Structure formats: C-alpha cells, structure tokens
Image (cartoon, rainbow, N blue to C red; front, side, top):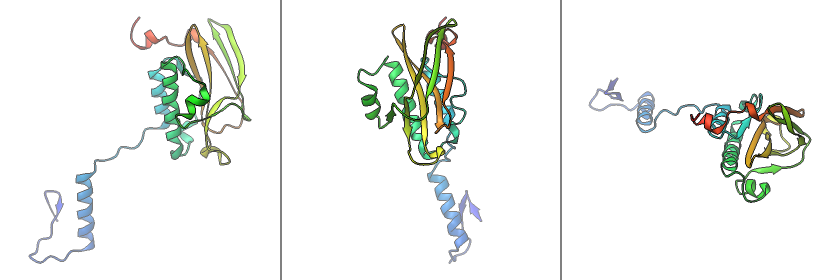
Length: 195
C-alpha cells in the first residue's frame, strides 16, 4: 500500500519485508534521481558538430557506420569533433597537427593500410585530387567495431581552412574515394541566415 507515492505499512508494529524494502528503495531513487534519457546516436552528435561549423563538411555517407562503434569509443569521436570544430574556427591550429591532436589525447596517424582519395572542385573545376592516409584512431589490434577511425582531409582555400570528413566509424576494410564541389557547399552566411 502507498501514501502519497511512498510505501506504507498499516500496522502498529509492522514487519519489514523484502517487497516493502524494494518499494522503498525504488521510491527513494525516483525522488533523488531524475530519469536519464538515452544518449542520442553518435551520428547525431557528428551531424550537430558539422551543422555548427560550415567548413567542417561531411561527404557522402561518411557517418553511415559510426553508430556501430562500441559505446566506449563515443568519447573519442566526440573529442575529435570538438577538435575539428576548433581547428576550423581558428582557421588552423598555429602548431603542427601532431601536437594539436596530442594535447587533446587524440592519436593522429599519417600512415596506414587505408587510403583516402578526395577530388575537390569549385564550379566543376578540379582544384585538388589527392590521396592521403591521415586519420584519427582509437583502438589497435582489436575488432573493427572496437577500432574507431576518422578519415579526413584538409584544404586551405581562399585563406580558409576546410576539413572534409570522409569516414567516421569502425575500421574500414576498403579504401575511401569521395568527390565534392565547394560551390555546392552552403556558405557560412547562408547557414547563419544572412543572404
């Protein structure tokens, strides 16, 4: 039985039972701890970072597999997105990328078995078509889902730094090839509602 949502024993010398203690514990926890909403998918966090930073660009299906990462790799991806937003906002880091990422406890790799090919154009005119191996990683010698990878490329164009996210997710098995036309990317003024 309950009184105002709390367990209540209706006798002068009640016998405390296991069900009563369980009900009391549940009522106390409900009063002390708010309901915890489930974490949104990791892909939503990446999308929010990209939406907040117009020169941080997702290309194609770059985040299609990121929600498959183990929960304990989510912090890595979150920290990486914060670092990318900071890099774009500051138009660079003023130090080498190794040092920049190291101070954020992110492992920056310049080599590896996966290569990324990105063709960048402006109004259909190719301004860069390069292959790179750079990526951020968390987890080695483990399963693909435990080995989080973020493959990206950077471009300084018209004195602005752009970061292109080519893949965010478990360690990929094949090379990554993407294309983008910067003229089709929304400008910062369009994204901020200024026309």
